[in-house]
Amino acid sequence: MAIPFKKIILHRLNMRMIFPFTTSFGTMQDKEFFIVEAVDTEGNRGFGESVSFPIPWYTEETVKSNKDIMEDFLIPILRENPINHPDEVFPLFGRLRGNNMAKAAIEGAVWDLYAKRQGVSLAKALGGEKTQIDVGISIGIQPTITELLEKIEGFLDQGYKRIKLKIKPGHDVEMLRQVRAAFPDTKIMADANSAYTLRDIDLLKQLDDLDLMMIEQPLQHHDIIDHAKLQKEIQTPICLDESIHSLYDAQKAIELGSCKIINIKVGRVGGLSESVKIHDYCEAHGIPVWCGGMLEAGVGRAHNVAITTLSNFVMPGDTAGSSRYWEKDIIKPEVVVKNGSIQVPTGPGIGYEIDEEALEEFRFEKVEYDM
Ligand code: OSB
Ligand code: MG
Image 1 (tube, rainbow, N blue to C red):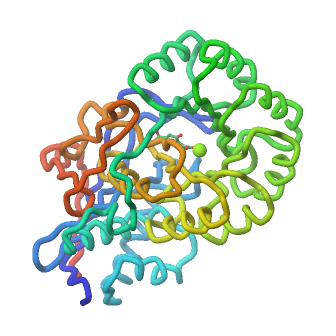
Image 2: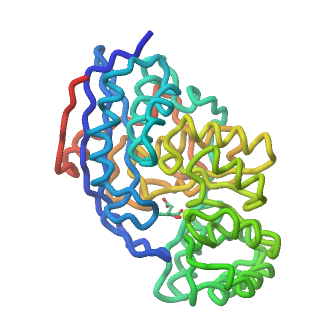
């Protein structure tokens, strides 16, 4: 039976993180995004979250571009094409190039609505079986090594299962050496967000001595050729983030030997259906995956929890607890990390309630579209 959509509502929010987050491409603290609400004729409500930033420095999408694409194209496509299952959404959107984060925000709301209509958890609807998931933490570039070491210690005390450190030229090998010396047995990895080129190969080779779990996206944001060359020269496993936008990209990267691990971000690859496909392909080809983060609020975070229940998410992801980012989140209860794990909710859909008061507090625009 076709899902009887009644309305799509775009809630535009602005939330301030409790800390500035610095990567090789810039510093973020204010998080602007959309909560997409899909309502059916029976009053069920599904929720998705857009993960682009106001500035196109991670991918080309922005909060503003997401709005245009959702309003001008994606919502009309959903209005004009009856669907029975959320797996039909991404192929319908497939006639439009790119804009994966806009597509994922809408598709995520449809997935949550579908799972709620079925009375099953989103995790179960996706084929996930884990009842709890292991998570690590991603730490931005810190002003001093002392502050960094203190931060790491604090997060390890909270139980996080691995530490990811952002690196950039001038803030890499020496910093990582000091961290490794202070924490000899901790699972540590580095994320460069494309800050290096093959000319840095000698520097990147020095990481081989530090027993890192992996280095994430050292080279160009679209590259898989140079990463394959680099992987042949270094022992540290390469994990691709920015370079993987689709199952196709994952297939080519694996074929070329550009990476040994893939970070799956639902928004970056256009939604949950494509995430499952990439997950399954990687599983069949012996490539472990983990779930990346985009500093999400509660709804996006809940989607990350759900997808991480699939079997090949074998490495701790970046889905930290709500309190790592927010004074107050927009879901009830918040996402809680205990001993480095999150208990997967079993209620229908994302399994967390929307905190309507918080939604209203952070919302500065609301547009409704009749279906
Ligand atoms: O490269 O994984 C990344 C945040 C913003 C943009 C890109 C990335 C990140 C993170 C943060 O590493 C992960 C999180 O805590 O959500
Ligand atoms: Mg990354």
